[in-house]
Length: 254
Image (cartoon, rainbow, N blue to C red; front, side, top):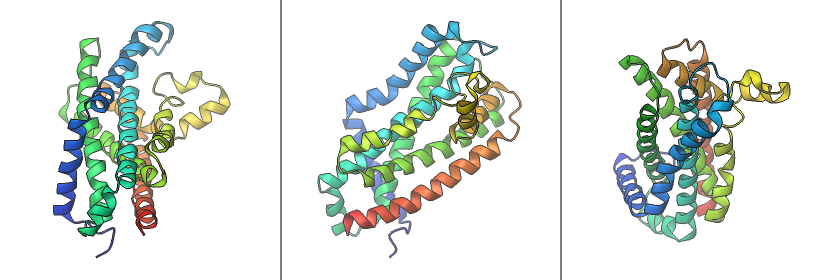
C-alpha cells in the first residue's frame, strides 16, 4: 500500500497515542497553553498604549496572538516527530506496517487539538480584558474554518521540518520561521506604518491574509479578498507539506 494512503484506523490509534503523550508532558503543554496568553498581556499592557491602531489595542492584537499559538504548537509537532525518529519509535511502528501518513497524522491532529485548546484560552482571557468579538454564528464558523486551515498547514509543515532535522533541538530551530512570520505582518501593527521594503513583504506573506480574515470575521468588519488569499496560501502550503513529508519520511526510514 502507498505510504501516502490514508488508513483511518491506524491514524486514529496514532492520534490517541500523541494526545496521551501531550498530556504526560505537562511542562510543554503548559508552555504551549500559557505562553501565548502571557505574550498577549505583555503586548496589550506594555506596548498597547504606545501603538495607535484606531481602536483598543486588545481588539487589534487578538488575531495575531491566535497565530502565535499556532507557531508555538507547531514547534512541538516538529520536536515530537524528530524524537520518534531518534529514539527508534518510527522503526518499531514500521515493523507493524503502520503507514507514514498515519504516523504523521497522529502528530498533526494532536497539534491541532492542543492549538484549539490554546485558542479557546486566549479568546477567554481576551474577552476578560476587553475584547468584544462579533456575535454572528456564521462569522465565528468562518473564522474557525480559516484558523483550522492555517493550523493544519503549519502543523504538517512542522512535521516535515521534524523529518528534516537530526535532533529535537534542531527541529525547534527549524520552526523558528513559522513562529517569526506573525511579527512582520499586520498582527501587531498596521502594515501602513512599516518601511516600504518591509511593507511589501508584510502584505504578501501567508500570515497577513489569515490575520486580516480573522480580524474582519471576528469584529464584523469587511474582509474583502483576504479569506480567498488565506485559503489559497493555507491549502497550497498544506499540499506542499504533505508531499514533502512523504518524500522525507521515505528517505529517513529507507
